[in-house]
Length: 128
Image (cartoon, rainbow, N blue to C red; front, side, top):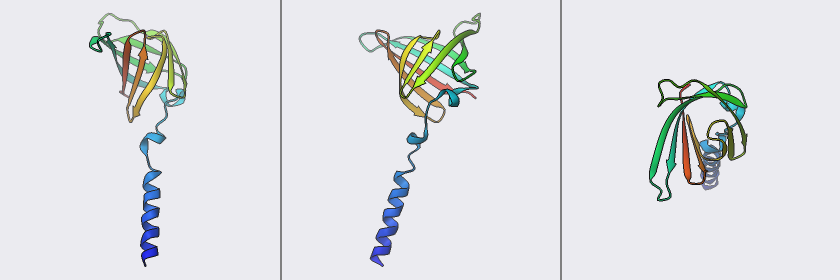
């Protein structure tokens, strides 16, 4: 009986350890295509104080391109951008161009960080 309880307990632990949600969440061009996100760009100065905050809407149209609009400018027009993803690095072209490290991914939320040359954080929150 003790062996059966031990076996069930070990099976339960194995099952629980293999159900980590973070392992299943992968950012890829395929997962971003045809989605729309609210983006908050925060630039930090050398004292790590938030100096600038900008708001955008990004639409990932395909697996490598999209459009964005500046929410802080009522007269802003749509602009194009390109992007690629290689493991933990997301590279933008035409929208805060450069390599961004994917810091955190959760359901409906992606946090990116880059240094240009000061620390910048780009928080993406899924709209649809």
